[in-house]
Image 1 (cartoon, rainbow, N blue to C red):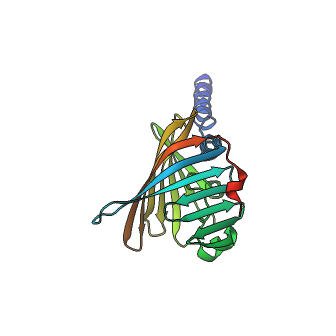
Image 2: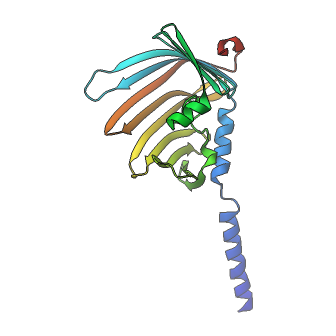
Image 3: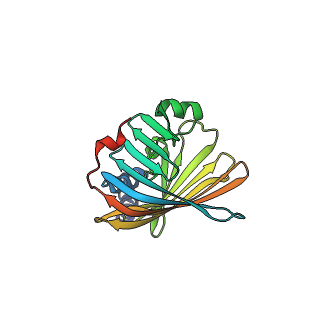
Length: 232
């Protein structure tokens, strides 16, 4: 009887060890996904942005986007607008007028954390939340819940592919339990690196639904970009 009990206890301990000790955490998956993105030191591409209306015709805009490191970004639109981000400063030039602001100040005034953020860095700041993870057959689902009460957002869910640790879907859920926005990401290999080549987004706010599709062409990564392009 004692022998059977010890064997049973050993099996239970082995099962607990095999399912617990080797279980991957949300922080592990997030770190690996971020490591993929951080392989991109510089980036430039032509962007086609399509506004997808339910009743109106599709409209599109062209823009040129580039970034260098974590804190330098430049976007040139086809409507004579240039936005430059360099550190904590953002400069907007439009129709011959130029304005420079501190990003932190704009975020505090507006309550929008996305100001000055690189649109390709979809995982930025996620680690500041309370994280949990669920494992599916081919992906992980990370749930991020704000540590401080947020008047709009209750949680963010991110789907990360298992084989390459690439985020493919991001859903922002409001405090009323309804979806505020959903983002779908498609990747292409450029210079051996997985890079976002298409981003579809649907936003639901104040009873209105806005759908956009952003396509990246002529993508170049890790090629030299002059710091002069990011001067304030």
